[in-house]
Image (cartoon, rainbow, N blue to C red; front, top):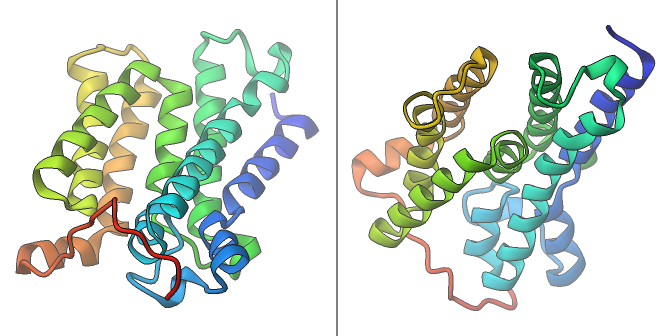
Length: 216
């Protein structure tokens, strides 16, 4: 059932996703637009690269919260609309809200529709929909990051670990989550196309998360 409340929640999810935390923090505390430096993306990775650890962690947490909060808007809509919290209808609505938030991050209305790659916001969505799978994703991400120091490679492999864990570890009966996981893989490949090219050429930059930067 489609209602004014469910439509309003979708719109709110987009607005949550559109909050350009990297841009606003860079402008408010460092006097720069992070999109003009580094990779040119308004995301946590580029914030780490351009502004350092403190700003990077702040942006990462805020971007995760965007996806997590938007996805959990489903709890405030009402059971008569979304169904019981463990129902397929409810989970599907959560996925719709989360995907909308990710689109907001990619194309933020508050930042001229120039956003980031959506990895942290995607993770916030995964955290809300399937906590156990999110633990797997974090473990994979951190392991690859420690071994390679490539954030892009870590994000790609962690993203692929989500549908694999859903299918082979947790055996989820919900086809929509499996389909969503596959869509995540496609989205990650699209948004990381340039990173993949640089990785293949050996030109991708590594990150030092403990590097301090106060100005650019």
